[in-house]
Amino acid sequence: MPVTPVESVSGAAVIAEDRAGVMPPPARADHDHRHCVDGALGRAERICALRGIRLTVLRRRVLELVWSSHRPRGAYAILDNLGEDGRKPAPLTVYRALDFLVGNGLVHRIESLNAYVGCPEPGSSHTGQFLVCEVCGTVVELNDQRVSAAIQDNAREHGFTVTRPMIEIRGRCPACQESR
Ligand SMILES: [Zn+2]
Ligand SMILES: [Zn+2]
Ligand SMILES: [Zn+2]
Image (tube, rainbow, N blue to C red):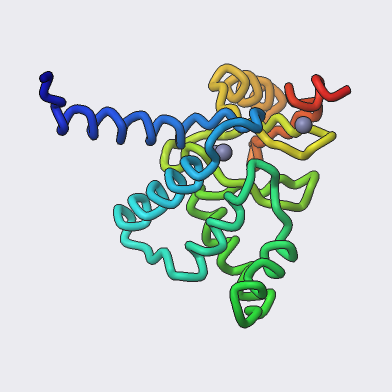
């Protein structure tokens, strides 16, 4: 009977899980989203521990709610969800938690939707391009350095200093192309 090398198997599983979290196939409805959520929470905990900042119960719960799907969530939807947990916190508390998560790169604000989406690669420095499906709202984050570099170069030629380099690109995700 072959002996399963438990250590390497579980090690591989951890790597696979981590990868599933880092690069989720968000436009696909058939992936196991629990992996995305678990991966995101795990990464957030590691980043906060590394930076010596506190991922409080509320911040963690807000992050979990932002990650409830790959569609950006508005602050009031998050507030409503928190109300379902028990006592509804003050809106300002939720905005502060979101500011904390955005400030630490765990969550991005999609300006055109005035809503928040989880970052699949927090901790790595990036500028972010977002593919936003105009039908279902699913967002895919890209971090193409060529795009960032082109923007920086062109801005520099115009003597322009970029403060918000994020780009939101509208279109249709694969699922919504199929359902037409
Ligand atoms: Zn997912
Ligand atoms: Zn990001
Ligand atoms: Zn879509």
